Image (cartoon, rainbow, N blue to C red; front, top):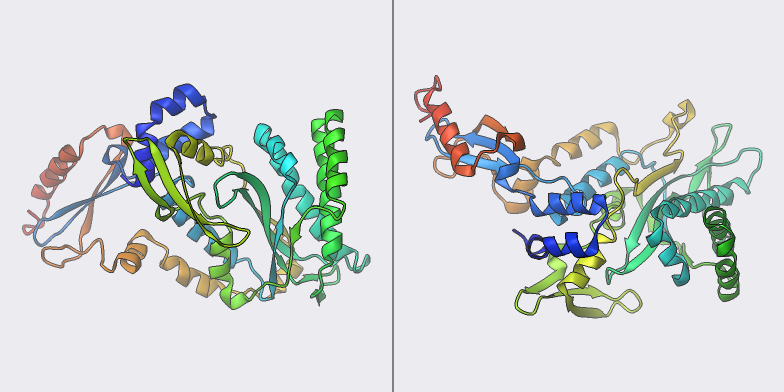
Length: 387
């Protein structure tokens, strides 16, 4: 078990009976705790030369799991990179007022309003340049509900192409973004959508937001450009990452029931170390687990539509290069790159191991029974050396 599995395993019953979590939380926590557990199945490999056996358990595939979440982030990065066009992109961050955060926590359906508001503002920014052509960019929006200190802070990271394609198929570059328009428009659109969803009771909060934010909500859109050649690293850093990596969890004190973790404060990049009760740490984490089938990453503009004119655009990563990168994103290749050795190479004789059998959760076999079953299968093998 890694340190996060230990924390949640020790407090599992307390989570269920005191916090009364949502179904999606229970499902993801169960998956994360049992990630790599042989009881949930795996694959048995064997060496034909010396008969050595190796069992590789299945992983949980949950984004909440730090191990599987990191793999998910790599997969999403490759998927996005195959869609990115060969043009400069700009990274924008759309944030909200502190007084609005609890609305999104209490009603998670309102998180869709953040996506629709960003979509409306970005498209309007490009369409107002030419109402005949209606230049449309390609942009990817990613919802982050967490800050560096793990507190609830929903905001949108958006990667926008610095240019768009018009109705006639012409491409026009756009190097200037009107920050003032982005701030005002995002504030107006978001507050109007929230009022339509929540009702008249939201009018007082809406008025307070206009008074306290006369210059609009904060939108980070400075010319911090993403070159096509660096798109893989840039997307992987900001889009689709797990809530917390195990490397940020410094210690777990069972005696005092506390967890210590660190982060760099966003305001001044100061290194911060925080020690909190384990249940408070768990509460900060599980609130960021989305509902099942909720899309945290969404494609808009020319990245979402499938028109023949869009196929003529030059992609930053060709299909051949994309397939090449995918070949390195397999379990065996990733293990070889990160750990420095081939996991399917027999440690005794150096022979490449072969697939023997796959076990599923419904088999209800212990690890010892799996090895006995694999050994029996190797005895019945036609190869006289496999025993």
